[in-house]
Length: 339
Length: 299
Image (cartoon, rainbow over all chains, first blue to last red; front, top):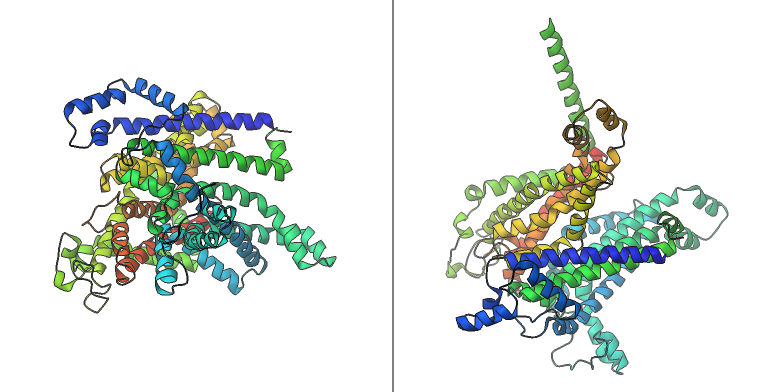
């Protein structure tokens, strides 16, 4: 087990190293002068030249990469040319908002996906199965920004059932920052009203993010249920008169958990990329909107950091998924030789 | 005499091929959704190709203003209404399809071939250093979602159609490398490959003449499904502002411009958004149909 985790950690480190090399290489070979971009067109030639020296831009590429890697390992990702602050400070500020949103979306997609999958599989070829099929096709074909705009338009602007953009109304003061998750901070600081409002603001963006994953997880669970329904052991249970609810939850749902966990892990990373769009539409002050701003402003240090953070999240989540699956599935333990 | 035999043989082969196609089409046509998808797709492609001749106001796809006809709701003159500066949204949506389809075709055209070749080489040389090199590089590209990498690369270039396509192609090949790698590494231990090796066939022959034809069906299916996804990524890039630049009518660009004027002028957003959904849905339906015909399990 430890051996397996160690091996996976090493692999992830290798991939992240490669990723940093790739993205750094692209950032440096692109035409354009990062120093000039950072200082703006008003700076004179001398100032630009000084900054070029400071940023090691006059050195050959491997030396530049060495300096960057050295700084990064010491927690310095450089300064953002757009916010004029250290990139690390920006990340600390913006990441919690996005993680809060994504965790909420993952939770929704897991619960709703499982429930619809079980119902569609158990009542196969019923109207519900047909409906869930149509929705899953739509979920796959609708870009998340289209879903986001559509939900905002219908539920917030027309029906006025949900609050609009942002994490909180402008007039409400946010809770003191403890974890950065507004719902939790609100509860911790004894302001349940604020927590509830923050939760309400999360519903629409989280559903926009979750829709495609609800569709996918629902389909996977359905396939697994349909497949297992025909197995002999289910028939035996039925003959023995075991309650339907027990058959479904104990014997049918269990085998479908493993593929679902795998897909959830993949989903988490894809949620981070879809959050780029959803945060833009909902003006969510999170990491993804920071990333989009950085990209639109050619903020090189921030772009490199953003890609690495997403790569790191992806690697960590995948590792966790593998460990969880080893816990759940004895055959996976044997296959990987973890013992 | 010899000619007669040859001709008979050819005839037989053609008949077989025709039968195979007929059988495939029969299987495909059993899936009504796939047929609907195909019909919709044909209409879209035709409309996009003929856009300058069939749209009511082809000049509206270019820089054009007519403020007196600005922000009109859908009517019989302007089917999808007009935008703020008075351009016909229907004409612009049909022209937008030209960009979307171009992105899909060019990205897959650039990305699939290198991916397939690298996957093939790595799969056939499984366990050798060349496999390690190719697959570890592939892993690096697969370490972040393609959208993020494509966005980052486009951001560092100048945002326009050409760079957008190059960036997407650059992040797309690894998925084909991985698919073909999996296929090739399982095929290399099949008897027909062993036999070719024993008769002394060259490596190139084995890879491209023996193994590659057997990868055709899954790659074909994945390409159809991917057309939809590439179009989606393309629309996403233009939505963010890193793709087709206004005043050119990119579908994503139009959605972004229209979204600023919600909820009053809903037609400026809803119609381009629907256009995106329909084309992606059509490619997905056709891809699912092909998956059934080829009985490909997973791509």
